[in-house]
Amino acid sequence: MMRGAFVRLLLAGLLGGAPAAGAQERIQIEVESGSGRGYQVAVQSFLPRRGGFTHSEPFHSALVEGLNFSGALEVVDEAAFLEPRQTASLRGRIDCANWRGIGADGLVQGMLEVRGRELVATYRVWDTVRCRLQGSVTESRRALRERELLARSIADEIVRRFTGKRGVSSTQIAFVSDGDGQGNKEIYLMEADGGNKRAVTGNGSINLFPSWAPDGRSLVYTSFKSGRSDIWKIYRGSIPGHPLLAERAEKFRAVFDARSGRLGLVMSRGGNTDLYSVDASGAGLERLTGSRSIETSPSFSPDGRRMAFVSDRGGAPQVYLKDLGTGEERRLTFRGGYNSSPAWSPTGEWIAYTARTSGGFDLYLIDPDTGFTTPLVVHPRSDEAPSWSPDGRKIAFSSTRRGRQEIYRIDVDGRNLVRMTARFGNSSHPAWSGFLE
Image (tube, rainbow, N blue to C red; front, side, top):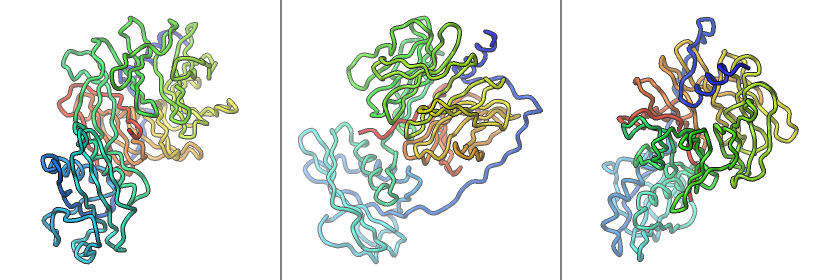
């Protein structure tokens, strides 16, 4: 491949653009929004004791917001309660008929208190339909400064008790933005609901493609701050960041394999861009692809046995799959002339990807085994760079539907589209964390 084509393809992925589509590549698609009623859950305010009073109201608000965020549970309006709005006791039975009478399928009760420098929440969850406890009385604690995180973590556990799958309101999303107004692209973090945005880099250069370690304690990202494209690793807390690999070859992107903790690495050696595997420490470099085409955008299956990636070996970017055990590779996408940015779902059943259409770019889902394809997000402007929530229920992505690039999220059934970075510069390349402990 000529050097010019290499640069166009690579910069399309790095800077969020791509060549315009031709009329012959027009794809006719439409989306139908899903519907359905989630579990209706009543939430009594937690009884404040031993200093818990000052934390009670903001804790309650964060708990309710976390439950509603799941999309699987809906919190019943307190104005409908036939019982007190605040928990009286965590002992004895409740009047299930009164809670069922207002349409509540479940009830959350609790107590909140301060113990030293920690906020401690003790709670229980009732199934009011069958009038029985959902598990035992549970105690959870966090530092006082992590009050909202404590509430969201409890909300996620309550979601698990009702649905069998943990909620994600206590997770975070890393993304790229020029939100400082200076035109630099820095790495930012925000909560899963879009709140508490803060920068985690500030080097005044171009920083791209954040990817979370499986334990959520570190991130890798691409940066040009050293004068060339390199991969850097940063940690939570006071540990300083550092380059992942010492060698001078250009490295364009790295993503974690959630199963093994190794990384898939896009690196150029001898003028050829291929995929490599490397330990999180930067050791054990192993080449995964060796064709003369350009391979980019690695994404691992949840079991770590396969990897989706993008290659132009057929003349234009398409999504391929590689069996990491046998080395076998096969093309996955055939519809459309430009498909990129694969993201394997945590459940393994779907790969989300970006497809070029006549209007720009849209998001699709494809079954990695059968190739069955269905549209997820369709809009006259461009939607790109999908990233899954760790429960597989939601996807974050970047969109230009309001002119500049912004981060949105949507339920995987097409409901509940939310803009997350309003009035925050140009924002792109979201990376949803796993469950943070």
